[in-house]
Image: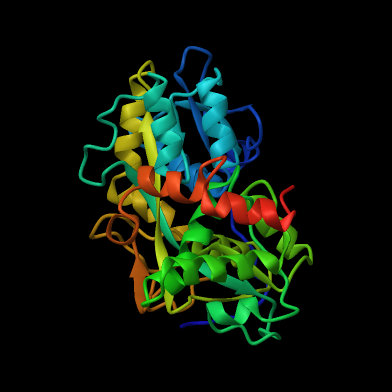
Length: 346
């Protein structure tokens, strides 16, 4: 397991990207140059990768394919964003936390059912679940068992709206189930986790903001969120637990999208696109990506260390379809019921 304290650092943001970075939220225009006749792509995504998508857009605009393309973007909780597109929110490209949020759009006829047929199976970005703690790790959080001790206050987003929260819950479940425990034992452990939760914000980004604002002792988060916060001058430590899960975030082009959207996706999946993800703390999903100079990483020489026991949906949970029903069904899901019984859902 690894921990890291980072002193305040100054985030360096290219001036040409500031307009795009400011466009997070419900629906805003951003420009990367040019006149009124240029292509505008609508990106709808979950909150966490906004900074990375901004950086990728900056690099894509330097290419012949991306020169002058404008962007309209909307970022928020993954499930909420998916439902918004289903209900009519304009999108050319979606970038969600979990594949079930894309499947919803496939079922609605908005995304082709072949969206995940490529080499990366529809995944465009990845990370792992970490335990973010206060500077100096005053509660001595070293692994999952430490966060269920009496008096430990946990912040994690709400699985009802946030894909990040679902990854967090699966990692907690896997800490028991993937290490010889029964489903009953795993359920009891997750119940203990949520008993210590003091805040269930709407999205992963809201959870990070709340934690950095002083709420809680430990934040269940994406590794890239901890790295990005450090890059932005925040002081925190984090632990990569012995058992964690590989977070795989899907991206897809909509059926009626502007043709430029596919070129954008191709660039996202390129070495340069994945390099920009890495610079914002995401783990590359293809080989050959330069991972040097990752500011805020645990170790500059090994910015993305391999956890002792890395779970995956495919190997440890069968599929997103199966686990969505088991854990997150609105009526009968195990995690849904645990949160309802806790009375802590916002």
